[in-house]
Length: 171
Image 1 (tube, one colour):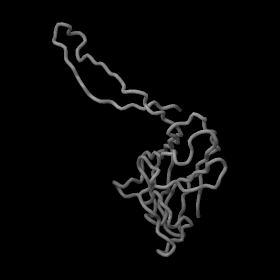
Image 2 (cartoon, rainbow, N blue to C red):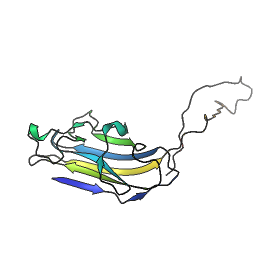
Image 3 (tube, rainbow, N blue to C red):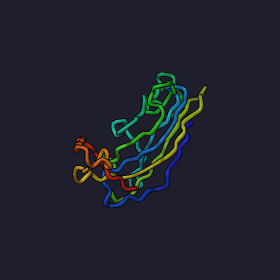
């Protein structure tokens, strides 16, 4: 069976820059046989699997076994979050770069599919904290000043130098 959670249609601003999808999740499944993945529909088109290459952080951890491997899951052979062994990237926050799918204007819709075979199983796939945002590139290096001890005017001036990267997020 495949169980799906589909978002409403989301209207994108024309000024969209660096669109990113973020979500928090936890998966505990029969490794390689059961698992979940994310699909996208752009401007009402067919849903397509978001590939591992689009993930900026915490991508799918494997490809589900195929029908030839004895997997009866309708999603057999697809990239997915599966398993649940400690240390695997089967949980946490995932970030997906959507720039190859849309540059602004139009609509998107997301579908979280969870497929399972006909036997066994564990707890499933849990999703939370879904965010769609865009991050315009920083327009210049941020400037930071810092006085280590503002009350000690008689002491010698101390200089601290470091680099900071900043991105302005717009909800």
